[in-house]
Amino acid sequence: MAFRVAALCKTEGIPPELVCNLDQTAVHLRPSTEQTYEVKGVKEVKCLGKDDKRQITAVVSSTASGELVPLQLVFQGKTEAVVPKDEDVKRAVAVGCHLTMSENHWSNFVTMKSFVEKVLDLWRVKKCEELGLAPDSQKMVWLIDCWKVHISAGFREWMLDLFPLIKTMFVPVNCTNKLQVANVVLQRPLKHRFRQQFNIWQAQQVALQVLGKVEPKDIKLDLGVKELQGKVVG
Image (tube, rainbow, N blue to C red; front, side, top):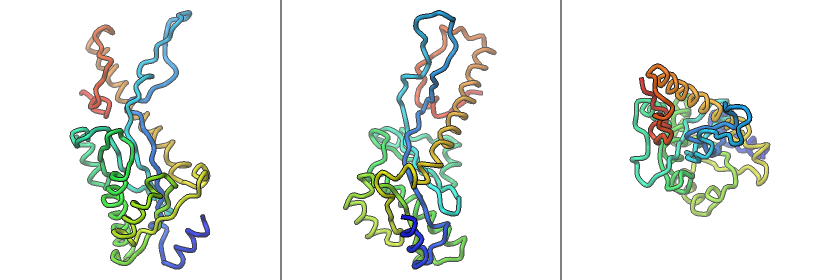
């Protein structure tokens, strides 16, 4: 695989900034832990949020030059009403991130097409302009795994017809844990940072409740999606 990528870059004059790897990963809206505080000797220890399975899908990408490609985030729902629209989201969109939705929050044929149109090809054009290359003729390498949507005839034909400058190559089956950079390197720090941000928000909520002398019985535990997306009071 490495030789195929190197050969294509050599023959087509593709710089490291235009060699991109991608992977999808699920991110829990409410990260939970196996540890909590409880009175010693109790028979049952409940852990808040452990059974909360709500997720979004993050499509993470990077290039051979070590740059992060803007994220695509897939939320669960049938309309754009499920996609956040606060100031943080506006800033993310301004730097190239793309937020979309699907019925089950999973990536699919439609979301992958939108990723190519609204993230990947825009990245290619941007890098061409920065490097003094011709966007109308400069090719790039897109290294992806053998997920059923990626290898489907419909998706590959769509790529060839509309984005012939993006040369799709596949990580060999059962080799993503060794050869797929987004899988091996990017997913853990992304999820770790997401958990950090959630913990900061959650600590702020507890601090506000302590300052307001809120009784435990009055605390609402079934937090809504908007709260879980990081909207902090105060």
